[in-house]
Length: 362
Image (tube, rainbow, N blue to C red):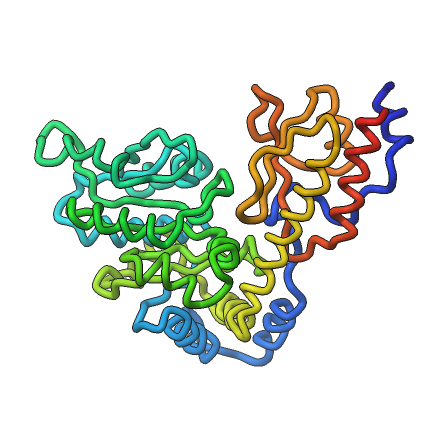
């Protein structure tokens, strides 16, 4: 059957794609908060009431006197976090340890290395998670003048493979890292989805961040219903010293910061951020269950957050993508990635699963 014939046999495509939570729009409550923040004038660079409320909201979220620096995007948040952490270390010879799946290594175009002048030490990890045992493999570098010195451990929660660290796993890793004299950064571009999966409460968030010993968090908002709003949360306030200057140096200081702050104020109010992430996770589980029942689909692991990684017949991928867009994941084995978002509906999920079944039947 030709591509045209395939298309003719398919139902109408779902209203929303399964390409990425980055493709989703802004939650109406967040959008309304931006509109309300647009009223009148407010001093720039964070000297406004919205930003003050946002900083207090994050203190309440973590139940601690944390320091918050708002940024434009996830890569920028990671750069601000790592830059200030590196600046707290003695000397420019320190490196960042991460997995070979880490976003800072794979999907940020070398930004940490180019911008910060540091080296990323990538540790192979099939599950995209670091363990104390894996971290120990770089211990032989310490104290040897011919080697860059590990200074920071950066982990991702949830990982690029959609896997999760438990609170105990992060706690054990932080204990080991601190015992080696290293700081710990958590890239939380999808921290809301991770929190939703690990209990869906503020206590759950604290259990794998501040209570576990994480020093600094990149707190994502853009993938969870916000418009270009991220935050760097210094759980260890000592590491925040000078961060207001660092943020400006790496071009992440928003002049009209009230618009970013207003978004987080809306998202954190009544834990809307968790409501959105919980829904996205549930939609991924529903999609997985529907497509797992279709002959010809190898569904992959059951989703822990809002991503599904199925393997399809190679001649099925392009017709399906032409109908409803998604991205390849591992093209060498014909694995793709389907992601849900805060605005994915059960009807979107059913329509997409029906389209997969229709294509296979043809």
